[in-house]
Image 1: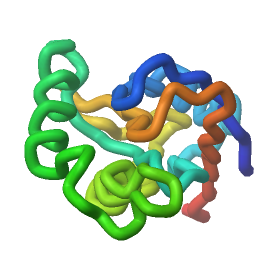
Image 2: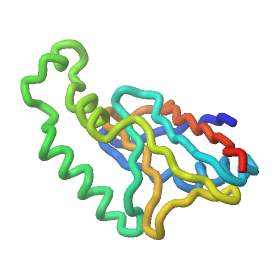
Image 3: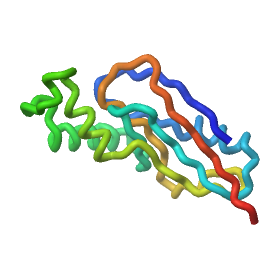
Image 4: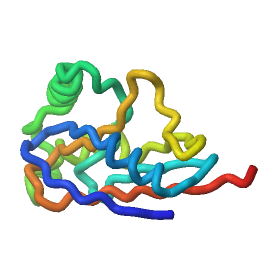
Length: 137
């Protein structure tokens, strides 16, 4: 089963919790046991699993990435469209995460949530592809 989520982002760098949307799709799939892949269909965006309880952590992740990968650092790609740092951040975090599914529920840890990572926003049409596979028992 495959579904898409389309979201709009508001900031240049932003982490958006998409856990509830993904949980709804998994629940509707009725998959008893399998895998859920969450994929950002963009070269300047990523998917991250981490804590969402403390909203400060999202800011800390963005701050750490911005300190490690500054926006302006004489990147060659910036001569084309001025977003090399966005591509590098997305490449480091990665475009997807795969989560086990049991009884139509994501098997995330107690504090884990799924975040869409925007590194080149704001954007109005960010596509996230959710693929759920069923494992025969």
